[in-house]
Image (cartoon, rainbow, N blue to C red):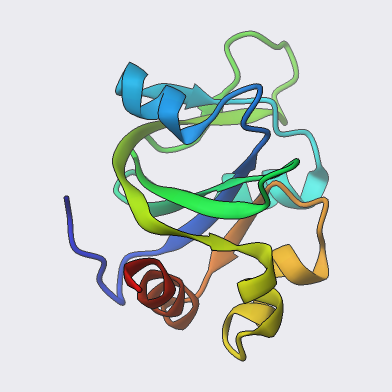
Length: 142
């Protein structure tokens, strides 16, 4: 388990848990995060750097932040696609959140309601400010 510093960039990655969940990441120990096609989400994904903190958010029926991961690579072209605009990032699990943080908290918390998750619900990759990550972790630690 690592600490989360104000100077380490962080992001939130959304996933449909029936397709790939945080439990899958924890079990596999590493994954290539692919399948991002939205133009804005790709812009954000290209900003991720090795060592950045990643919050894993389950969409679909769960709608909650469930775990933390670490970017274990910089972005690189998706090896499965011929489109140079599509990039991927490798992730390693850090830890599951003791108390998953539901979308309802994001919507009502003064700091978390500024996360793009609330404003742009279809976005699958988004940056988090240090204050947003700190507040999310406060909720997760109960």
